[in-house]
Image (cartoon, rainbow, N blue to C red; front, top):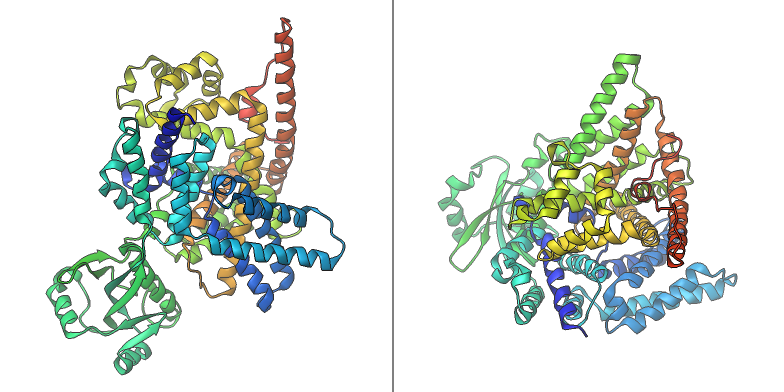
Length: 638
C-alpha cells in the first residue's frame, strides 16, 4: 500500500466533505451546489424504503400494482448503490452484498415464467435485505466509512462517493446541517489546510467524525404558540396536549424564567397564545426545535382555513432551550435547516426568470397573444416560487406539480414515465458544462488568494477565457483545457488545493477520453432516474399518509428543484431563439439529442482509437476528436 496515496486520499476526503459542513454565507455557493448534487443517499434509508414498500404490499394499504412497481424500482436503486458504494464493495459485508446483488439481478433481468419460482426468489431477496438492514445502521456505517478511508488506498471516484454516503448517514442519523457547520467550526483541526497535516494529524482529523456517533439526548424547550379553544381547554383539563409530543403547562419555576426574559422574548400576554414546555429526543438543539415546531405547526395547519390566524404565526419566533441546570438560552424557532434549504434563487435561476420575462414581453408586443407554452412556463415557475414560504412537505408537492405541468404535453405512458424519460437526459447532456462551471467557480474563489495571482498559467487562463461579470467563454475554456501543456501546468500549480486538483484531473479525463465521458453520462443518467423514482415515492407518501414522514423532505426538494430549473432553463433558451416552438417540440429534441449524443460519443471513442493506431505506425492523419461537440452537444431539430 502506497503511504503517499493513502495520505493523499485522506487529505482529499477531508477537504471535500467539509463543503457539506460549511453553510456559512461565505461558502454558500459551493455548499448549495454540493447539496443539489448529493444523489448518493443513505444506504440505511434506501433499505428502509424497500422494507416499507414490502410491508405496504403485505398489509394491502394501497394500490398493489403501483406498490409492485415501486418495489421493482426500489430493487433497482438498491442494486445500483450496492454496485457503487465503496463500503458495499470492500467492507466486511461485501461478500453478502455481492450475493444479494446477484439475486436482484436475476430477479430483474431473467424472464422467470414460473410465478411460484419468481415469488420464492423475491421472498429470498426480501429476507436478505431485512437481515442486511439489521446488520448495518447509520452509526456502524459512519464508523466503517471512516475506517475504510483510514486503512485503504481509494480512487478519487471512490472518495467522492464516500463523501456523499457519509454525509447522508449523518443526516439520516438525525443531525442538522446547521449543527454540523457549527461542529466543524468548533473542531480546530478540521479548519486547518489539509496539506499542512501530517499522518498523525490526518488520522486524528478523521477520527473526530466518529465523535458524532453517540446517543441522542433529551432537550427541554419552551415555546409560545397560538392554540384554538379546544386545545386550550384540553391543556387546562389534562395539564398537557398530546400531539405526538407532550406540550405541557409551565411549572411556577418555568413561568418565572419566561417572565424574567419577557422583554426579549416578546411573547403576547393574552389571547390565544400559550407558553408550553416540550421534551424531545434529538441529536442537536436545532433538530430538537425543528421537531417540536414542525409537528405543532403541521397539526395547526387546518385551523388557518376558518379561524383568524396565520399559520406562519402559530409558533412565536423566539423560544427557550434548557442549556444547563441553571441556564435557559434564547433561540429562534425558524433558525433550522429549512432556512438553509429554502434559500434565495441562484444566479442562474434569476437569469432564467429574467430571460422568461423578456421572452414573454417580446411575444406580447409582437403577436398580441401569449402562447400556451409561455403560459405553461409561467404557471410552472409560479408554483415553485409561491411555495417558498410553505411547509417543506408542500414545497416538495408543489415542485413535483410544477414538473408534471411542464411535461404535460410530452407523450408518455405515465407521469413518472415522462419524468424519468426527459429529466435525466437534460442533466446528463449538461454534464461537461456543469463540471466546467464548478471548475470555474473554484478558480474564481482562489484567484485572489494564496498567491495564485502570481502563477502564470492561472493568469493566462483568465486572460484568454474570461467574459464580462466573471463569466467564461465556454469554447475558449474547452480549447484551453484540451491542450496537454495547459492542463498539466494547471494541475501541477494547484496541487496544494486537493479539491481543485481533483476537478482538473476529472476535466482532463472526460475531455480526453470519450469512452470515459460516455460512461460518466450514462451513470449520471441512471443515478438521476433512480433519484426521481425515490422522490416520486416520497411525493406519493405525502399525498396518501397525511405528511407523516420522519426524514428531512427538503433534502429531496433541493435536488428536485435543480432538475426543474435545469429543464425550464433549457426550454426558455430555445424558446428565446425560436418563440413559435412548442414545449413538446423542445422535450422531443431533448429525448432525440440524448440518443444521438451517446452514439456520437461512441463514434468519437472509436475515432480516437484509429488516430492512436495511425500514430503508432508513424503515419500522418488529419482526423481529430471533436471535443467541443462532445462538451456542448447541439440539440437536434432546433
